[in-house]
Image 1 (cartoon, rainbow, N blue to C red):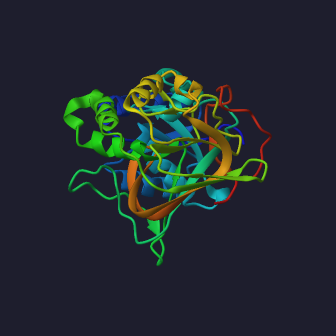
Image 2: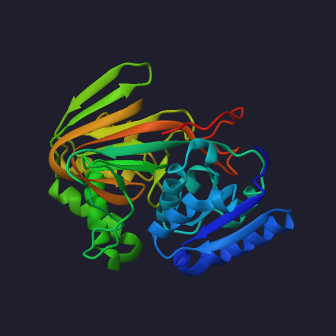
Amino acid sequence: MVRPRRVLFLVNPTAGSGAGARLARAACVSLQQAGATAAIRETATPEEAERVAARAPDQGWDAVVAVGGDGTLHATVNGLMSLPPQHRPALGVLPAGTGNSLARDLRLTDSAMAARQLLAPNPVPLDVLEIEAGGRPAVAQASCLPGADPLPVRGDDAGRWRRHAVTVVGWGMWAEGNRLAERLRRAGRWRYDLAGLGLIGRRPVWPGQLRWDGNDGTAGTAAGPFALVVACNSIHSGRGLQVAPGARLDDGLLDLLFVGPLPRRTLLRLFLLLRSGGHLRSPRVRRVRTREIRVRTSGAGFVVVDGETLSFQDTFRVRVIPHALRLLGAARAPGIHVHPERPLAGP
């Protein structure tokens, strides 16, 4: 595919205190000057962003650019993944939020540079994680605060739901920390640090069984209790945490990290090393590259999907859909290899 000619910008108007809207307007003008058709759509909720992304090809758009943070990107990705593979527009990213995990992987944290990269031809493949949970119907919220708006989650009559992610899926302390951070919003940018330190003081663990499918067709298992289990498509998560250095966005594999019960001092040391990726030097952190994981627990729990907290019952599964989307402006990113054009993968 050559450079997209019709580009729709989906903007979270509150991202960056309005910086996202300004950035989208400037990028829109640049694309129009380059001969493309471009338009901006501000979305009030993640549900609206997902719905607009899903309808983009019906309106003739061949690329959709998420302007905001991880939440805007998550909604856009799920809208695109609701479409048949051959009808999915290319995905673009203009970082304007607090997380910007995918943009960090792509070295597109400079907004002006990210806008220029949208003019690059030939979108590259991007793997997508598919998350499915079983048991009773799950409830998903953009936050765990009372009265939070529900995210649109596709389910079936058996109570299973499915979401898609492009960065990180986490359980255990990862999910509990996200829930706690939502209750600490008054702490601003420090709320995740405060939530992590609070959990370290409590040293919670979660019983469960973990199973993974090896990249060579082999399988492995681990028995809990676990402090955390994280499945990574990207290197980064949150505000610049290097959770899985060396992870690739287009290799058809996820990076599984899991940790058992640890003393508080060891947990604190690993927590402080997350920003640099130094936690992987610890023998207490196990890492496996695999295609699929399954976690079985007893009862209800929470899992974080691209920063969004979702509830599940008894089990959840994460698998890679290789090259499910096409990504604009990423040909020279360290986690991307340019592949010959090929059909997109289905779910």
